[in-house]
View 1 (cartoon, rainbow, N blue to C red):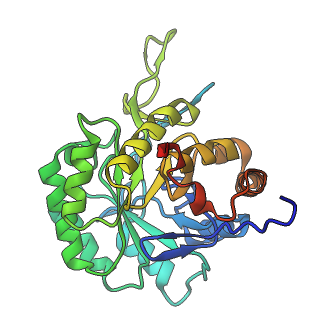
View 2 (view 1 turned 180 degrees about the horizontal axis):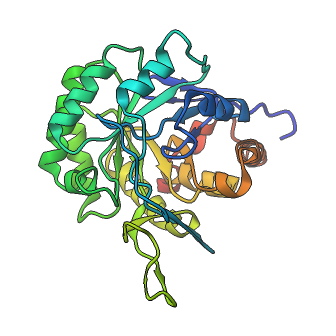
Length: 311
């Protein structure tokens, strides 16, 4: 095995990545300079903070709780608004980012998504993530993302504005049937999936005797949700084997990354672990993944995608 040369490159809906690690939305994606830092740390692609039609200040503190098994956060989608961010990312004083940038967008209605996507059309956007599954912002997620008809309308509106741009729909496990949502998204023109978003959660302070978060409800992330996320990725691959999936949820090591790949993910989102391991986690995971592939006798990342489904 010593002479095996492992190729970490992957392809997502026609977009080539130098490796399968993707910065997940909501983590360090607030400015182009932060995205550049993640590129230098070794990521294959970066996802912006979810951008909305108008600027959002977010919720008042406290907005995050650290637990032994992850985090619960209710940030409230704070962002400068799509116009401001796109101008900063693609304007005259832009920061050159040499890896694909996935623009994550969110809206309270199909009309808002349509307006936002019409704005994206004016810029050289490579990939778009439609955040249809935020668990703690009223009107910006689960209300839309749990209804197949609403998902179809959102995706079809965006697709009409961006006919050639890869569109990835961010799915939630907080729905009756993720497969129904996925099927509606594909019929409307989605290119792939991001699975999954955080899980709706609440933390209560037993001495204050009230919820910790100012918003009461937040999104659970970290290792606690990984088995759920792997299950969703497994189901999606089983039913839509040719559709690329970015697996997200509790990726804190190369072993977790391999688990998602075996379940059927073509790429892996890295998120809340950055708060504990900093950006060095990207090189740590890549080193472990490369060593694993070499030891198991595989030449490419794609060789193990979906392998858990084979007899």
